[in-house]
Amino acid sequence: MRFFLSGNLLRFSNYHREIDVEAATIYEGIFGLINQYPDLRPVLLDGDDEVRGVHRLFLDGQPLAAEGLREAVPSEADVTILTAIAGG
Image (cartoon, rainbow, N blue to C red; front, top):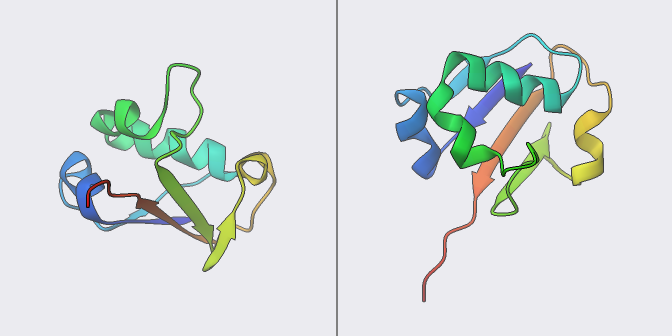
């Protein structure tokens, strides 16, 4: 699968916007990202190894709920991770 990162996440991935990872589920893919870019771990995951609530994930452009992270996805899937920005 291919992950697409933007915004603040880029600085933790050496500014790589697109990252290919071999995994059967998005959850496994996130750990593949972390293996390639360890600095992403504390940004993406909380203390229970769950995706932090500030991130929104999209599978092939469709919003993905937290329970969908452990479902099998095709190897050619595109996963976008967006981070909410606070402010006002």
